[in-house]
Amino acid sequence: MTSTSTRDRVNPPEANPQSWKIALLYDGDCPLCLREVNFLRKKDAGRGLVRFVDIADDDYNPAESGGVDFETAMGRIHAVYPDGTVIKNVEVFRQIYSVLGIGWMYAPTRWPIVGPIIDKLYDIWADLRLKVTGRPDLQTLVAQRQERLSCETEGRCRL
Image (tube, rainbow, N blue to C red; front, side, top):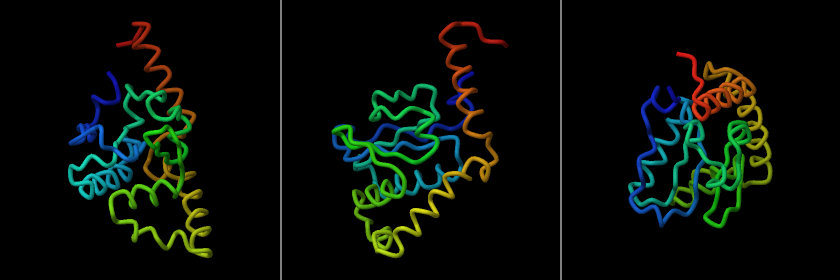
């Protein structure tokens, strides 16, 4: 059984896949991440400006997402521009919100004193995210994924 069958998919096709300005790589198994994604989907309002890519989906393909592998994507939030440029950390939120026309919400994170504090707080949050949401550590998640994908491709799953 793949991870996608154990949760509701929140990655419906966007209205116009050719019009996306930025791809958000998010953890579809993280309840807090899903809340943010659902908020951003509402703000996108079907315009397809943001391409939402669930990295927890077993079909996640780093080659289609700026080469960002699962482990790297799980460690820090990433986004990818159509030209393949990858950004990470708080800059992702600044850019996504800007694309959606609500950049004012993250504008203070660009201020000289506030910005570095927010960046540091995000680093702390990113390090604690899995634990706070009751999930295994990153190494365990990576190992589980590798075992699951290996099992699926080699047809040697234990039932």
